[in-house]
Length: 311
Image (cartoon, rainbow, N blue to C red; front, side, top):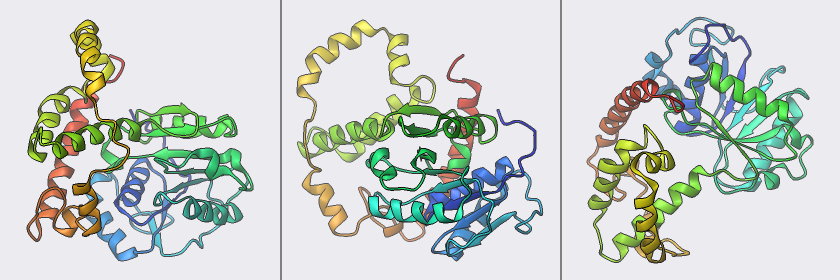
């Protein structure tokens, strides 16, 4: 539950996609004045205006009517102590932006960057102050979801981890967890599910539609309430133990993505925005889906909030 105490500390968000723009909305909703650095300011403003009603109080502030300042470079005023970076999965790109931020940010500023596959120690390598670098993985829309994965290692200073965790719980509406290591667990769990789905489709056990219906109509019902392991407790671990005993040897062990998926990437079929992914979409259909996701995310947020993780 967010506290009512007002936040006045500015926050910097660096990124060029919806995840970064959504994070800016989340932080602004919590009360932070936000500087959003992005390569495409018009696209960012379109997203912010579309979601302006998700910020409960658009109020004038030091950055204007929305109290969000959008810039297309990394030249911002000094004094920022909270910086959040969203980049592609590229080590050089991550280190370059962090190195630049280190030259502009105060000594006690924390820098949180997304990373699904690149270890934290690799990101920290050769940086001026590696102890203030941690991984923060989000899911879009950030402002209506509870997810926040924080990754810290033995180099990361505990005070920065505590700072982000406390802000997440008190202001950002998150239910965060901290992984002490170099990589998170969210993408590993998702990748296992995706690998098995690919295997079943590739070997004609199921269609793409079958996979989505199975996930949506079974796991999709209980995961928002319990998670996999607590659900096993609810249903009885013995029965799952018997099933897994026989099923485990049969699960996919593929080391590479299947040809049909590689073909999608090769042909530029990146999903709704391109008009085709696993499914085909008509022009304008991505906007309808975005509106549906926005509505659903708000509604499911209310449902999950009624049933907190620790009842």
